[in-house]
Length: 140
Image 1 (cartoon, rainbow, N blue to C red):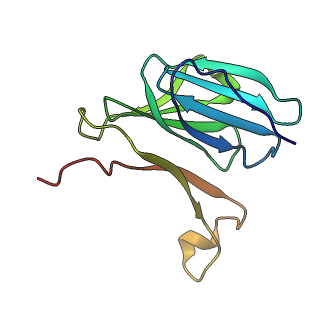
Image 2 (image 1 turned 180 degrees about the horizontal axis):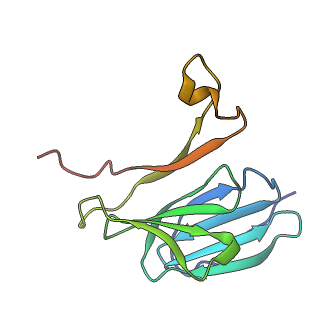
């Protein structure tokens, strides 16, 4: 089964599959848009207008949080798909003249151990944090 996803009017710079729905694919592009596709039907199901060219995209393990990296300002923007009209978090830690080349969420599992602090936390609890890399940044 093959589909051509052609919603972007400029270069598509990244794709990511949902970690909880293997039929959902999202893409980011230099046209400042995030598109979501049903891979079975080959149809676009959602669109988010970001307002800045995008260079990276990643799904969080919870399945409803996504992060995108900007192409020109070095920002990472986080959206909750439950309310995708509003930005959940905006990170501005990178050199503003560089693009974010890669973005991934890490899964930090909190598990029980011998410490009192960890013993109170269920093994199934997770903390998801965005991690980005800016390979193009100079090391001054």
